Length: 394
Ligand code: ADP
Ligand code: MG
Image 1: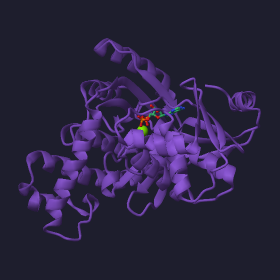
Image 2: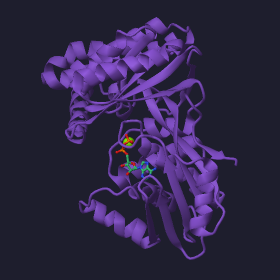
Image 3: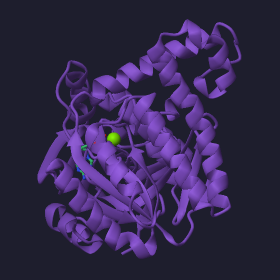
Image 4: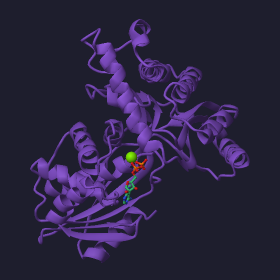
């Protein structure tokens, strides 16, 4: 990863214009999985891996974007980038990396932000791409604050998160909830962020200082992920409709309880019942997890992570063999308080809370154990919780 000064120098060399730099982090979800799109509770933390966007204004109306990660630059008019691309995407074209920043420019235009004179941008990030650590939210949020910074428009961070979610939903075409963009905006150093995905109110939960977040990347991403994600969303909607027909105040699964399931779950197919049970019990676990952090009770936090993993594996059926191997290996290691699948599932990463003094031994044991069990070399990242989106002062 280039340093900030190197990104600025590269931008100056490519475009002959000095840049302002902005960064937005990726995230890891500690607990609260697949709850954000039913108005529920989540508890992610921003990580110290981020995407940096360098930006300078233009006068010719064109938009030039260079991704250092992809070693590719696009150079388009606004119509080509925002309108023609949108049309080809909707017609089924495969995603291109530039669709993420383009989506953000598209929502900014919709908001009346003056983007018509164009921009030059250089984008470089060290969030692993497509690993479930939300490089997508980090590129969106970094682009958003860069464009807002360059045009002098101020918006609240929660509004920026919503706009970036809209970019991903309506432009890119990925039906994500609000968690990733929100924590990329509002993360805070050494804190997890408990987000109420209905009201967008959030509460910071201090992560005890003796703990590090260790992320194990299984290096697998099963191709069923996208289809399974959409089918889970449909199942959750189905279950919600059934509960709503009995209790009209249930607007989303967030409002339902285990008692509701006990009463009306028999009207659901067994699969829909399990999916709903995961979401309803997961919301309760998030609330308990906030308390556990506040009391610095890592044993309880770890137990909640264990339950959350089992629920995601058995009721939501979003795990896979490789991820389960990582979790079972992790919980046996000294100094590991808890481990679970994080992110959408079917591969990707596990999140582990590990005593700071045990991180080195943990990392070694995980790499060796996973390699011997699967033949795959995991990537392992250690992070503290980080600040959300911010301008970079060079
Ligand atoms: P995740 O969010 O888990 O990393 P996604 O598939 O949602 O996975 O988003 C990854 C995509 O985001 C990449 O394939 C790429 O298109 C885009 N992206 C993220 N970071 C960058 C970057 N630095 N440069 C260009 N595109 C990026
Ligand atoms: Mg993503």
